[in-house]
Length: 331
Image 1 (tube, helix red, strand yellow):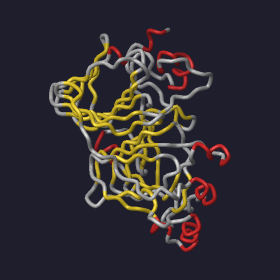
Image 2 (cartoon, helix red, strand yellow):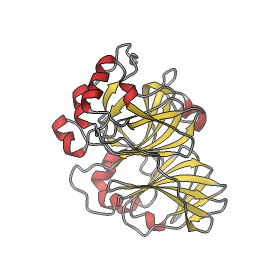
Image 3 (cartoon, helix red, strand yellow):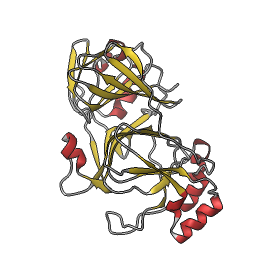
């Protein structure tokens, strides 16, 4: 059955209703959303039980990513796959019309004891309204004790550093880093396959059910890195990858490597050298992807999973000036 994994894979997006969401995913990129509700997340590639991705087209249409990992794990990942092993990344687009809760994800050395999963992630800002900001890291001098006191008196937001953001900015968020996305941002989020979030403050609002959302004071206090006082946006540095193609490295981590790839019109990215799978997400422009007879055009907001066995045969060519995110194995 190996031949069934000889082409890239497109999955059906999974919309997630969120109190801080909106309708931008539909308005900007034509995502199909449930009517009349705020949608904050589109899960584009997910091997999670609470949101399993299914192939959208081709001979494998309707097949879940979970099933592909079980039946074709070595072809997909480019290495042996352990029984029950999940695809390593969860890929989302976030439409933040309002501020998200102030929160943290548990670090690997504490997650199990807290009953959660570690979660490291990266944000890439596809769009940002004028004045948009994020809350990342803590102000100097913030201790666990002072943070806890401000939780009690409702001023904990004052402990967070605020960063103005614009389209094209990116932020790396290792587990343990306190953070929140601000309203007015449209974000590509690449993360470790986890969905554990500990909220510390939710702006005194109610959730979709009209009740305050659950907060997680104690596990959050255990998870926060209180020495993390100088986080910065990922610097912008470009190198030439090939004629008409430039590369901006965003993350080099054991969990994933992420690059922003910029194409001039007609520019082409040559096939990879093998190894693991790629995930491609289009930020702007239009691109044509080909691989041994496979051909598909990609538009902004679309994602493609390229199995490891396909990466050496893949070509990506830009019809117009374009940008994509490329996710590959960690370093």
